Image 1 (cartoon, rainbow, N blue to C red):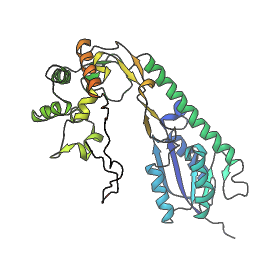
Image 2: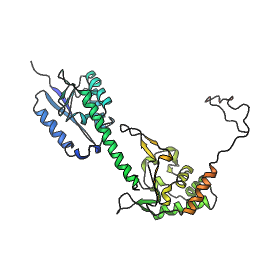
Image 3: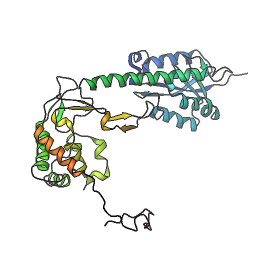
Image 4: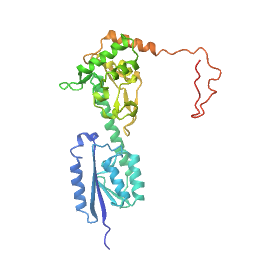
Length: 336
């Protein structure tokens, strides 16, 4: 009886998180190992290869992987081969779903060469849970090590942002150090002057800058993700906003301080971050040349503090909480 010929998909993945293993785990090395395996087995016929270079194993939203899933649905392939389980994925929940549910329901054979996994054999998924848990632990361990290195750099006062704050630029001679951008720094000085000495509100400052066609930070710093926000565009152009002015007025970077840990990843498995509380910030003083002198800074902070003073309500309207909007059914806030 003639053996069934499997239509093989070669899948390779490499991540920046692989660290010292990047050379041994290179796409080329993975391809060679899979090719040799296919050549040694007469029941395997290569149809297509898929590669995700620079994608973490804890997230399956990868272009090569998604293309492979589509080809599975189109019945172009019925066998997937990887160098080992970690190349397929490092999250034990999602990896387990594909290997134990998705692949069987779609009649897909899976082979992980280095882990001696072949779902065609009765013992093909033996010790799978243990192996997946180990891969998941490895991913978390790498994430913790990267976080620890970043934390130490922040404590030393090294700037860790991908793009320098408006008013500064990255020093080309000293890594993670900020130097003044003369043009943008003058705009920063003017913003503080308008707020502290001219009594202008953040909204009026934003209007003034827009009227003079001063490039907003997202345009000046060439940040495409911010340009796409519809709420920030006027006539197809990204503009200054009062919230932006407010953030500048409170940013300690302008008095020479480096402020780190404003954001923190929720989990090593997802890209979502949370905004940390001010008491969690790491602030290192006098790490670069300031744009704003301390006298101006203190005046600005005092003014902000006074503006944020909570108004004490002396009287409550008798119908408060009893009247609702017909359209949205929200409670009306009746002002005295």
